[in-house]
Length: 254
Image 1 (cartoon, rainbow, N blue to C red):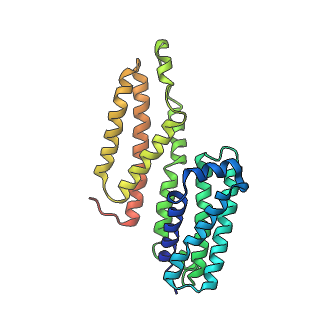
Image 2 (cartoon, rainbow, N blue to C red):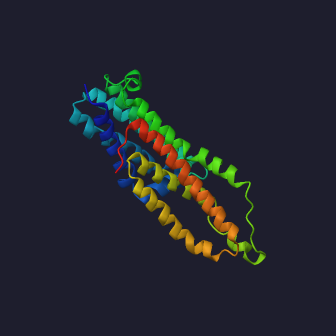
Image 3 (tube, helix red, strand yellow):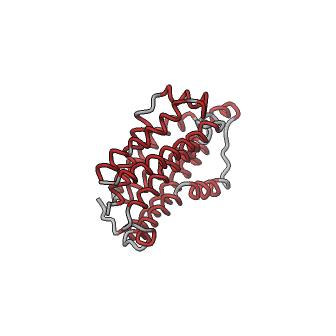
């Protein structure tokens, strides 16, 4: 019987090649313009199915199984892409992410079916399963929940800004600060989980350097303190989460 991870890795490789490297921009534009009437949509879906023939033959699947797999993958890819190009604002990241999750879910299901040795029960009983759950929970916690915690704490502090400097205070990307916080905490937790706490200091120093010029322009001291409190809360919470998970994973410091 086949190795699940080997089969899935080969499927994902073909998916990445067909979805991002073998799909010209003209095909994408044609699919958005004509949806199901665009021949490019059919060709793209069929390409995904045909592409999987290569790993399927290498691992020794029967031709009947290969034919079924090509039909399932091509059909599912066509339906998912048709839905995506038919939706308004399909260029939003949320639709892109959902599109990829659905495609990968189909490939995972096929890989599970091909590998009898791998079952949900076997996965849940695997010795590393609790560690995976612990890490996933940690990453989920440091994103939206931590943003809510930091926002709740900062609500009690009032930022005082001079009237002449009001406009500069509100300049910036919409939700840019939240995204920066997500990326910052993801990096910090990743470094903590690999035991590289020195890199955490590098992230904090880099952010401080980039923010120094902006904070220098602020007329009041309150904005500087406000940003500093938010940054330190973000670092402290994420570092504590990383430390607890590292203890459970027995991570050695570097």
